[in-house]
Image (cartoon, rainbow, N blue to C red; front, side):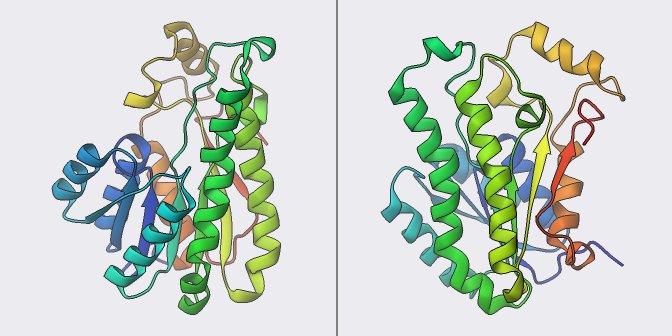
Length: 246
């Protein structure tokens, strides 16, 4: 069965750069109609222009912004078949649990957890109408091995995995498949702040000992959105070259 996304309509949050931008590229190449959304307006517009797709400015901390994004996207596309919740913030990197401040914790949870829920909620009517709805949440393998000094982010991604399972139970009767991908540390702009030693820890610890790039993850995403992945739901797929086995 082909993994093609012909006539598939998908919204990708966090699509301005990094993994999200590569997801948009891969979906576009597979035949999907794609809209990306991001808080990074200028970068998002550049990415959209390069890929020949549309961009919507989105602030996941603002429920009204989320509702506007969902309405604009479904209007542009004439419906929606898939949502990729890729947008997230890290913010807590490098700090021990007793060094974290409440504002940082709250920001990570608002964007990564509440934002994912609200974005999913906003597009559910369209996904139900689709008859082949897909939600793919981008988690992280840090939640599978418990990366230290990254507590808020790791906790938020663990919540995404739990949310994925619960949503899969709730939405299965509507023919909506909900899954998560847990990438390893990927070499993108957003991970440039990560210490060299942590990058090397990942590279050397993988069963396939090399750097991970966005294209390593995009194939798994296209598969889960496609008809070939339609009977897979509630699962978390680690894509990390064998750094974590589950």
